[in-house]
Length: 138
Image (cartoon, rainbow, N blue to C red; front, side, top):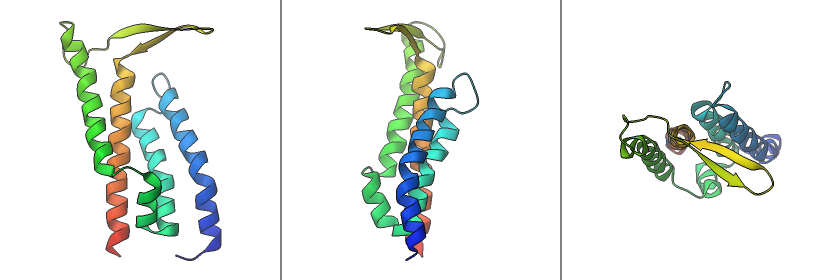
């Protein structure tokens, strides 16, 4: 497509949508959002970029093959479940710990955010695989 308005909009919306995706991801543990919704929002700017500039340029901007995102996401999800098993609890049991940061005190982190990260990466990878395949089929 050769629309100047679409190309300009795609360039300006990409960083905003990616920042919003990170916001949804971090917010999603206790409020609406999380890995799935954030992954869809993260895939949207690449879909828009693909429509504006073509799938080849969108893949170049992504810099990672979507299948690698899928594999990494699946591994992160399995590891988050295996951490619970390693301490003698059932698979996918939430394990929590504390990370001490200078100046901000202790930060509570756990395996659910690792699982959400896995879902996030899988959703981005699958969505972009489908979008790029449809774009290249034309």
